[in-house]
Length: 130
Length: 133
Picture 1: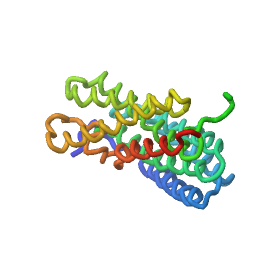
Picture 2 (picture 1 turned 60 degrees about the vertical axis):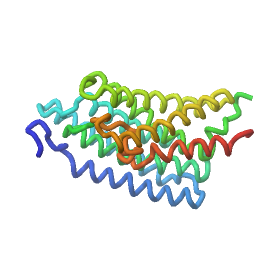
Picture 3 (picture 1 turned 120 degrees about the horizontal axis):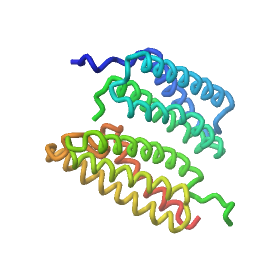
Picture 4 (picture 1 turned 30 degrees about the vertical axis):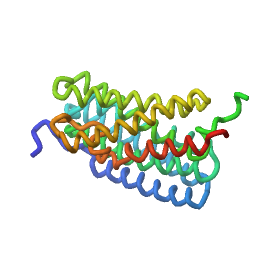
């Protein structure tokens, strides 16, 4: 059972939509990697949109935080959020540095890990980190 | 010469470094936080998390450098990682009381989609296949 402290992440629906966006884009880039294609420009545009959405999510979460409902694990939450926000730019830089399948493959794998990290952001907000 | 990109940063090395970097950052953050706030709850598990984190950081840096010496460091680090995940995974199954709190290597990394078990095998295979390039 959840205790009074363990509040659910306030923008769970939004965050979950981003999780599935990461998974979807990751799978598409995985297919492109299989076909030996570089990361296409439209995927970079989607990654930029994803980054903007993550920034909005972060701002909303921090506003809730300063508004008096802090996350259960503030320090861990802060660092997870930081990593999640830094991930897409690093991904693009890393994936563009390599033509062909391994560049898009690296972005694909990183996107799937990013999906897990966003889920962790939700969990850390609610508490219950091992 | 120095503008030559090392083999560990090309091709599959890109993917390998991406995964190791995420594990290095994630494991380090988590281990430091656990040690700072709740060390007494499970000292063995949390110290082990820190060891795992250091191993991941060393491997990531060594793969990014990619010089012959760095490749040896990476291989040694990956062997430690493989032994760690096998030993800790086995102990966590047979003697669960030893690790009341999960580490990244508990149950062979099942909580991390078994990536901790597969990663060192892929890493050693990758280093071997790029030998002499």
